Length: 507
Image (cartoon, rainbow, N blue to C red; front, side, top):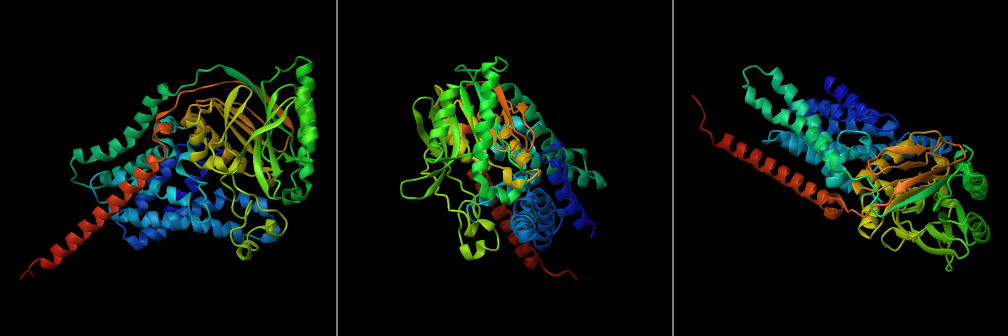
């Protein structure tokens, strides 16, 4: 029972390490606890403890789904998603019991944890990468490592540190061990921390291709949850009003005139709102990025971000590729009726064509990650490799109440800033909007469910980080190494079994 309790407590500690709490150091502690739970356990028990750990993490982490769906649908979608994600950690727990006896055990244990995060971003239904270990570290000592190996390296370093601590505690309790047996786990603790500190001075923050003054408009929305679905025009009106308030401040000389104006995701509808957008962008006299739902000539809808030029109108656009299952499209309508209220009300959104998420606007190449896409590695990476000098995250989070969802998303944007050495501009309909420096620090931000704007000068950068050069190789190599470790462990186990059977009986 104490192992089950410790597994649950460790999962809860990992949850507490996520935003909005700045308790990044709890993440290694959580994995130290999990390591103690799994010590000398068998595969089946490891699966059970891993599942308990996963439930204790995902149930509170994803509680914002309750704010989204409300009381009409009960707790079932939230419970089902949390349990599905916990199954990944159940498999992780079982596999860890196989590899923990290998030389450099903490390394292989950590690789298994991080390797499981990649298929979780693929399956089922396009995956759900929320809750990756790296997302606990927007202000942690390990954050700098994202510029080297992205989210996988950050997560691996956190988990390695925790498992190293668990092995160290086990060996300290044993009598008769020589001091040198402590060197391995001590190295597993010290090396990731030292690497994070050493890499920090290499994280570039200075402007390389000039600067731009960027304005973020947050129109705000009433906190009415799903009832806002039938009032999309309200989002347009609040953002038009806040844009004009910003314009008045600029004309009065109290705020610097921006080079680029950024609206959140789906704050407008086109072509219905084109004339009003033309007017407000023309009055402003600055280029804009406008998040909108666009109805195409074939009648289908796309979630787009449009480069809007004063006096010219809409230009190039990026259509969101990583759509939200059961929110923007319906994989299985009969199942969906049990999960989402949108199945009978909302039109399905058509995904983008796979082009890099970068737009030319305000004499700048701007990368775009639309809301949910910030949790995935490839959109920002592809944009930077295509020349993006600045990253933006337009998002519509007005459905999620005063939950932790917006803060969790902001933490992901902070990781992306360091990973790609780019300033990141988060534009949210109802908060939290923010301007983030390339070192992950938040320059300015807004509050939830308020109208407001942010105007900041941001650096433009052209340097491509090692993480961007490596692309998806950290994910693939992590999976390969984890699979190899499991195979070696199984072969060793089989060999021991054969040797025991072959031993002659004694006496």
